[in-house]
Length: 108
Image (cartoon, rainbow, N blue to C red; front, top):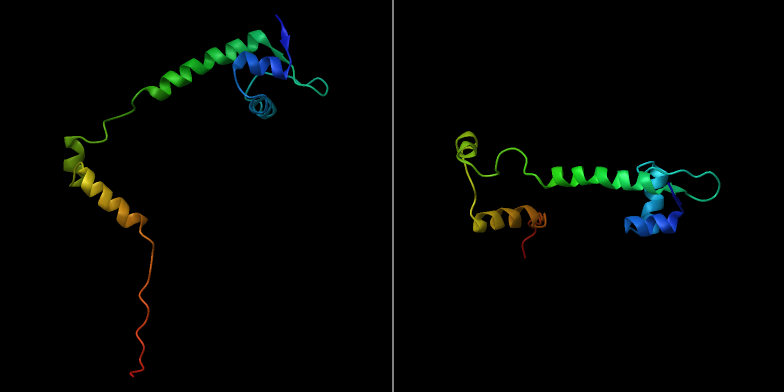
């Protein structure tokens, strides 16, 4: 078992020291601050890093049903939009909201 300071631990984990300090302060990574400096145990950091493997693998797995299926078409009354239709919908949603100016009641 070996203890590491902030710079050694950040080099071990290959992350920026400030990011590591924030994780340690939030309690998201095993660490201690017995005085003015953060202290890390190399075995704890290795175990924390191993636990992150499972999170990464789960995040990469597809969840649920595919986004476009025949079941979606019957339930929603639609289906997959073509890229052109999707672009048109996005353009209408992102268009700036403008209102018509009132017509003048005065005639010249």
